[in-house]
Image 1 (cartoon, one colour):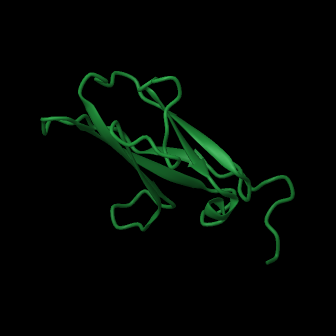
Image 2 (tube, one colour; image 1 turned 135 degrees about the horizontal axis):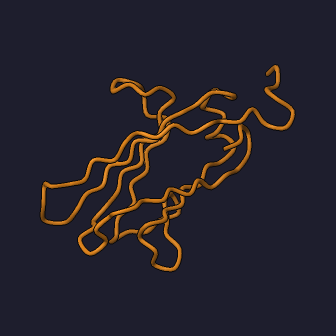
Image 3 (spheres, one colour; image 1 turned 180 degrees about the vertical axis):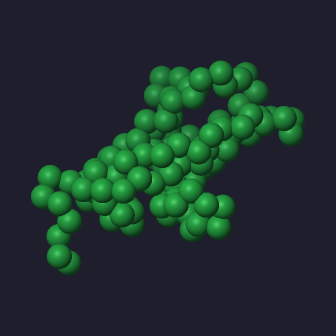
Length: 115
């Protein structure tokens, strides 16, 4: 993803049971720590596809999360940030574990401005 640019992040899941999928929480943090502040938090649910997280053509393995340039300014350019996704299945507490994934925030074409 590029700092200071409108972007859409595609998140792909494998081995997800789409027949009982209810919702997914997407939590974006600058640091991979439990107590780190969430910079962006989005919930996608089967009942409420929204502009904050959406699917295309009913494909429940690819989710798209748009970022405004203002949202990208909340991250540190040239550093990694992290996405924690939490999958929730209907009528069960046996939800799959999804590893935290690091994403690079590129500094942009002209680097970081002075202010």
